[in-house]
Image 1 (cartoon, helix red, strand yellow):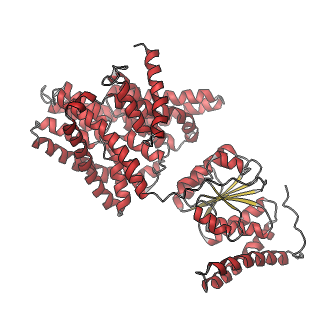
Image 2: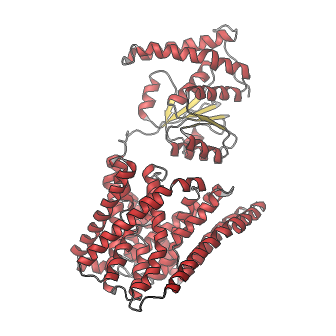
Image 3: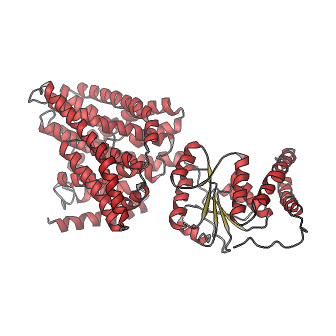
Length: 598
């Protein structure tokens, strides 16, 4: 089959597998795996050269890891050292030793048992990260722990490759040969560090000076292909090299541009990778020995998951994130395909065993994905409200408030007291319904959605107040506003110091830490941005709001369980606050207020 015909088959598989699997509720990864099994040598036999396709498809892994690692600044990576070297090392050693012991009990040779055990102890970096990125869970505690363990597994590839000649029939290499292999690996990684600092960054700087978007995209792709080629030539893990390249560029000024340029290729290449994994599944072997194959798959997932669950409970303390960790990375990994193939070539294990293990690894990915989608996610995610997003208002309000919790409400109260219109958006149905009882114009929706921002007239607004509780959603919304509505002045509430650092890294100047006084400071800043004088806004917050809010807190404390009285007091509070501001400004409360300056 010609190259064009193969490309046609693969693109057709990508186009058909993804929407069909999503329609069936199976997710894109399962669709790609099934599509690969159908077109591969064990299905319709449209593609036969699986090994060659698999090496090309590993570019998808490189792009994904580079994409994820761009979010890992050096300081953040240092914070992961415990999960990388402590828990990651414990997972590989415990799981590898247990699986090798099972192999010995099944009459495997020492060499075959060790390669089998430690090969199966490694997880699929591409598979796990795809799940974490798709579900926006990479920045959660269990997501960071999973990433640290996966990073150590990539580091473990080097000694496993060096171990193969020691276990083969060709005899053990001399100590000098082993040291030479290790020095070569260290030299390649050191060369990558130096080239990233002194070659790649200047190259991106020169390309950026041309202001040619297509050149920047081509340079990003060149970085991916060059990294994969060099690392593949010396036999190192592509995942380790791509992660290192991403970390080196994470602190550069071109990080966000790289992410934007690589995003379209990431999805396509990852689809190609999972299709190639599906092609390795020997369907005839499954039909011949179904009990053996599925028994090994369940055994691998159960044993590996038990180790990960135990480590997760030790590190995270709670049951739910520990179970999520176990489900996300208890499958086999793509490196097993390479390791078992090399082990067969060096007579460490028999070909029949290698083919069986490849099927087990491929099916473990499918089983884990199905388990995650069908049982784990629905069990621990919040119950869906079944409510459609509201239609945003059509007024051209000067302020949009995303997140109308305790922070957004303080800003909203200041604006309402000054009779300045605003559009508030919140993703909590309960919060929306509760605030509407108090007369607030709050709308249900995801503020990071571009269509919702456009419907909310973000192009006509002047100020965007970002007060969302969820840190990941806050960062996602901030990026959307910066990219599509750069004219808006952003005021962002930071939940903690790390969140504040990430916002500052994005170039956001008005970052407010989470205290009551900072909520007032944010409200004062919004008033100033709309043209009110500094002294006027300071009076609004300092002389009245603190005293008024303290008195309101004590009044509501007497009947905070009586909703009817709370609603009545809320209306009274709003009118009283307006009168306080009007009186302070020396105006008659009945006079209409002039709109804020344009």
